[in-house]
Image (spheres, rainbow, N blue to C red):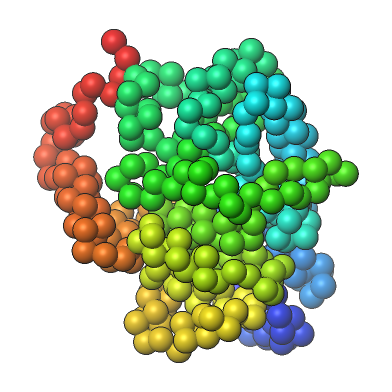
Length: 373
């Protein structure tokens, strides 16, 4: 599969040889390849592969689409980085700390090039107590609440949600989407990590000659496992590439802290699975503390299942997240009987049961008091 060769971080010569053989022996469906690369969020990697391999092998339209996507991503990440610096300065005046994660910062710090990672929003971690002032500051600088959020009452937002989102428009065109997180996912996921849990792993980074407060590699990896694994089910190659790039950029990592906090939030299996997938799919060197993961049979079966899922058609993968198999994975992949039981209960009540009744009755399965009067 050509896409797999594009994300190899090591053994690049071997990856190029395999890619050449695929080109010579298979009838490539180019529009499908582009659609799949788009879903997996790895168009910069696919474009880079063909730049080295055979630029002439790409049909003209696909080559142009890849070029446009890469250029568009570069412009977007530069804009988001500048926008982040503005938001940071506005909130700093109110003594509010915001920490960037995922997005442009992961590209800059872990990929070594902010344009090498596709993203479409600005993710910021905050203290929940600062949300009220953040609303005022963002509104005062021309941002509007993301559609739907403004309808929710504050009690529900604080109790159940994990983020509060703002958009900025230029006319009718949305040019920015900013997400403020005070935990990594909705409450039912049982990953209520807070900024206080991560304060010991806030460090100083540099971007465009300016100092930033950022998360350590360990904290970034933990949050990636929470989002990409527990919430998104490791269905995109970018999910795995993020883990691989963090490990590749940080050969020495505090695996004791990482494992301790993964266990605290019932993510031990997902951490091991993410590391296993990163090692298998990208060739990245795995920290010694995780060596046993690479030969563990249970983790291997989970990894094979994820690879099979990721190999599916992009159209099916796009709807996988809300499918029953994805919810089964969310339950099965977490640690601890209590966590599994509560996730299973949520799945049965909020996912399975509503699908068993006519559409006009499904609202009875959801809380009618979540919206403002």
